[in-house]
Image (cartoon, rainbow, N blue to C red; front, side, top):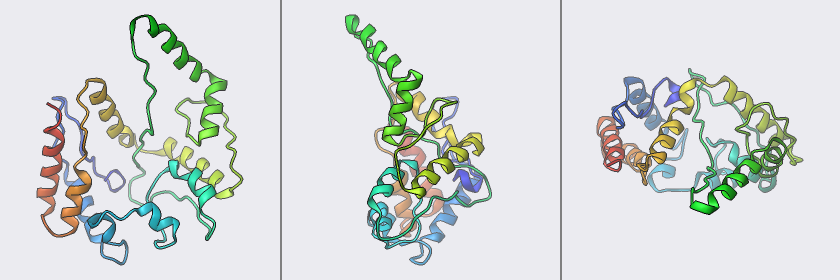
Amino acid sequence: MYNNGGKGFQLGDDGKYQAPDAATIAALTKFKAMNDNKVMPKSVWTSGADPNALFKSGQVVAYFSGVWQVPDFAEGITGFEWASAPTPGPVHATDINLGGKVVAFNNKDTAAAAKKWVDFLFQRDNYTKLAQANGYLPIETGLTLTYPFKSKAALDGFALYTKEIELADPISASGQAAGTKLLLEGKAAADDPTKPELAKFINGEQDVQKTVDNIVNGLNSQLG
């Protein structure tokens, strides 16, 4: 959606998800058209097929994913050559997300020890080792990371994704920012209706307007 000029499903000032803009609806319509069993196998969205497995087994030639796949691909793909590439599209944008969060609970006499542990993790040298060993893109700036992968495709992938984040339109992080805000408020949606509603749209069970209405209403119904 971002890559095609849409703002996606944005959290409004009232704490509720808003109806998407026209560019988002156009992007979803374009996406449906791509699920034609030529550009993209229709079965991925309509039957729940695993796109990761389809790519690793060589059944599809391209896979829209992210940097978290690179360590797995570096070790697990041996039957063909692969490479990371920027997402094509009219807008230089992506979905900048997080694989996990570190949380320390403020539990009376253990709070100080918990905070000390988090501080230890994010000391420059410690965090560098953590990011390198696990194949993370760092959230800290100014680090020089040397990843332990022998695969040139993997190393090139990390370099590409790092550069892409620097170049990405600011909207790329908006979904993650909204999710974090709701999480801290104890209101995070447990189930994202986007995928099942898009599957209905791709399968011709509903039109695009019904699809976006169901997504917005499905998200908001969980916020309380």
